[in-house]
Image 1: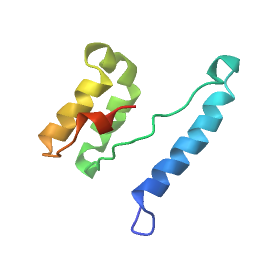
Image 2: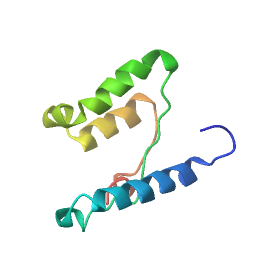
Image 3: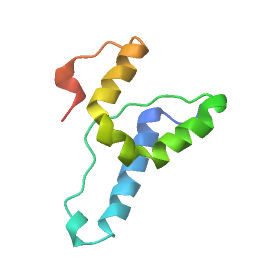
Image 4: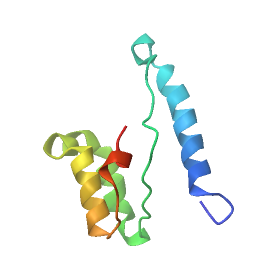
Length: 89
């Protein structure tokens, strides 16, 4: 991303453009929307292959552990304090 772009601007643009795209996939996606919040984590270049593999297999992965469970684990692992009432829509 570089220093010239605030993370929130990047996320807003990704969510906006991907939402537009998903809605072109058919009428059943007309009501698609992203949740309001987001989490952003950096990935070390040495872990890039693992991160790409995770994204490719995300659907299968989340059959074993929900996104919410995994997100809470990330927050705990990295010592990020949070209030449950503000994390989910």
